[in-house]
Length: 325
Image (cartoon, rainbow, N blue to C red):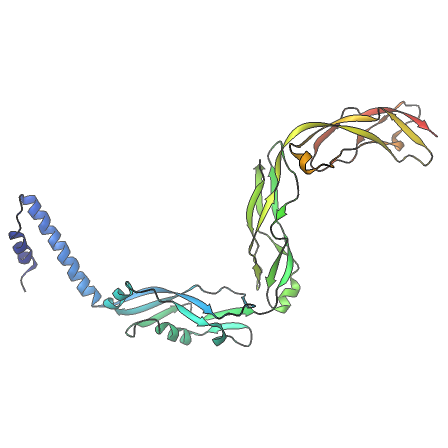
């Protein structure tokens, strides 16, 4: 066999090259191409070892069955074979493993495929000349349940703080108030509620919308695993409201008349509260027990205040009164 240099030189002698540098460049490229061809020939005809990830899927699973422990998405195997065999895989669909549910269930509520069985199933997906030297995980052992699910409430673990001059204007909306929990009968009896992952948000200036995950339960699965929440946040503006003064704790048969009968209340409220809180009313209260003999005035204080109102103040701290018996 002629040396590679002579072969390349003969090819170049029949090619018209204008400059010495171009000739040298082509000579170098020729060596690279031929070397690569020789490397591929030697490599693909030798035995090599590679790691392959085989997707695994369980088929014919009954609708009421839920897996309670993680099921492997892939089986990682180490295989050896000639390089030409692996080259064929580049032009074929990647092999995957399907295992039928009913073929591998046990009486104690497990789906189990041992190492020898798993190796045999995987070998069917490969070429006959391919040898499996290692499998990870070394078998499949997953607990399952076919018990009916249990509907339990979702408890939110949420900490929110609106920005200055903003406030939460209503309850938290949840896309699901309850979720289904699946497990064995004993575990289900001990579960009365589920919790969300912790959510913390500060400096809010608009309604917070977020997808929140449900914290996992040992030996159980939750469906759905996520819920959507919305926390209404609105800007606060200064408002005033005419408030009637009410008298509390007056003995039966005694009537207390106050002057003036109404006062102005100033407060901070969401700018759109009139649309969603049409019955939001502040009260001003005079306590009969606060009347001091001989005094012509009695203190007036803020009574009931809707939660959407902040920093409520009255225009008067006392009013005149007369008592009628």
